[in-house]
Length: 210
Image (cartoon, rainbow, N blue to C red; front, side, top):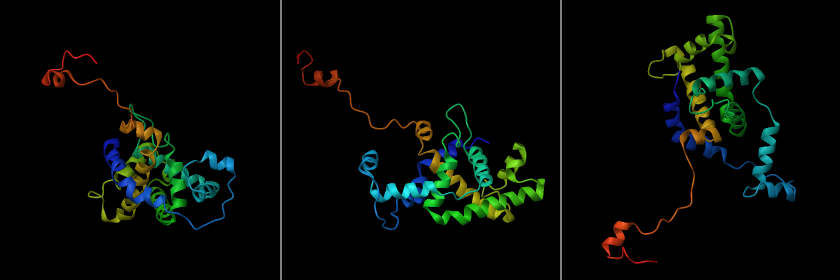
């Protein structure tokens, strides 16, 4: 299931507004305990940002089983190919774990969606999603990955997978691997090659030596 092109479109549009901007919202004011050395290492960042990152990284939300499920889903959405590594290679599962802690509104929908997915697989295959075969996983995802084709009873799964897909695109295309995949080279200094010959000829200066 190669959805890289459509996911790339997501990565270039929706990822910034709903996820990344909200992730930059300040938390409650806290007493700064950073040392000068730590501050130097985090140049350009506010003290509260540094402290909040430490706090969020020290917490754990998803269980090991949930993280395993997220990893499989992320790699189905953006698999490894000849262009770049997979979503898990870009540490998208870790990104999602961080985001749901930073933006708590994601917690209930994500956990509920993961449970919904497991229940569907338990009813069909008598195993949770991560334990069924790759073919069965794809068959399950195909029923919720295309909103216009999904059956009405699959609506909860469609809603969950849309969120999962958006978070995966956000994490991947803001990672080093994802930025390389897009082909973004960043700002580069101009190389002055002199006035073009056709311009010099236009002003009769082609023989002028500078």
